[in-house]
Amino acid sequence: MKRALKYLAVAFVVCGAASLSVGAAHSLLAVQPGTGMGPSPAQTAPVRARTPYIDTHAHFDGDAQGVVQAALQALSRQNAVKFFFLAPPDTFDTPNRLESDFLLPLVRQHPDKLAILAGGGTLNAMIQQSVKTGDSGPEIQRRFRERAEEIIRMGAIGFGELTAEHFVGETPYQYAPSDHPLFCLLADISAEHGAPFVIHLESAPQDMPTPAGLRPPNPPQVRGNLAAFDRLLAHNRNARIIWAHFGSDWLGYRTPELTRRLLRANPNLFIEIKTDPLNPRSNYPLDANGKIKPDYLQLFVEFPDRFLIGSDQHYPEPRAAAQRWQTVVHLFNQLPADVRQKIGTENAARIYPLGVRRPAN
Image (tube, rainbow, N blue to C red; front, side):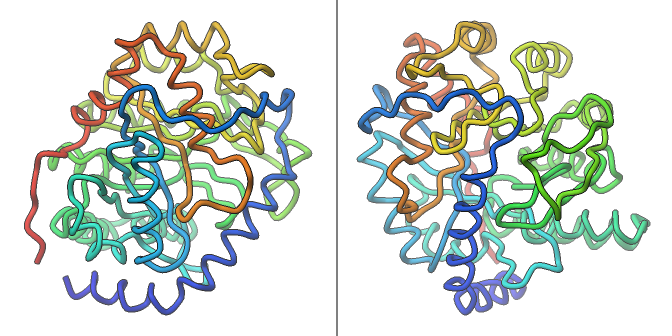
């Protein structure tokens, strides 16, 4: 609890600066498309979800009061029933680094509508530091476990957002092998506590040049990472691992075919759906008219128990006319009713420990 209070105090001081930097990063990303980006889908007026849904992947900009107020107002406008907030994956080198702990005092006042996952600003930073130093020994693992278990005690429902491959945006370029000892340790902790973790991974089946649209300080070469991801998934089948951002692909390899293979091979893998109307990139699930592409619809129908809505929406909403939640709801509304019910609410309620009330220290 002392550490949580420390994060709270720091976060309120730096949140204004963080809000400005995140806004700048969004502008940067909007003009740097990845390879193979198709035409932008047709923009439609925002509509509410046809049936209730849980957004399992939302981020925060600004002060805690403003974030929570904006989120509560958005719920009814979207026909959403709950938002999960995560800190972005970050490093210890980032000025004004935030962790989602700082939202807890207000989130606890609305347990039926809001929840947090944590670790993006701490566990992820510890993994990145371990990769940099080459030290993942017993003392590092002890500190990592201590922080992970503190996250659970304080009331988080899982861990995230962590990353094994993340290009420069609002946070620096980051890489760690998916089967790094600390990722495997987190899988064990996740299984012990029934608390899933969310991983951001740009899928690269082999080493490849970085696409031209991803300029420095991204590295010139992307390392193959899918074999290590398979090993992480196999490390502990009781760990529920959630792969973020299906529908937002920088490298061009995260296809329905790849996703199908991984889902068939790994019963503990779950996937969040994201659509970004300002930067659709490769393998976007909507066509130029805003319709779900047939191969994506077939995948959702084939694996209705394995997908979640994870819009990557920021609150308060950015000033851009089109919001990420709008296009993911547009996709959601086109799903068959039974699939929509599972992806909307049932899967999140089954995968996450939403009924567990953990006492805070």
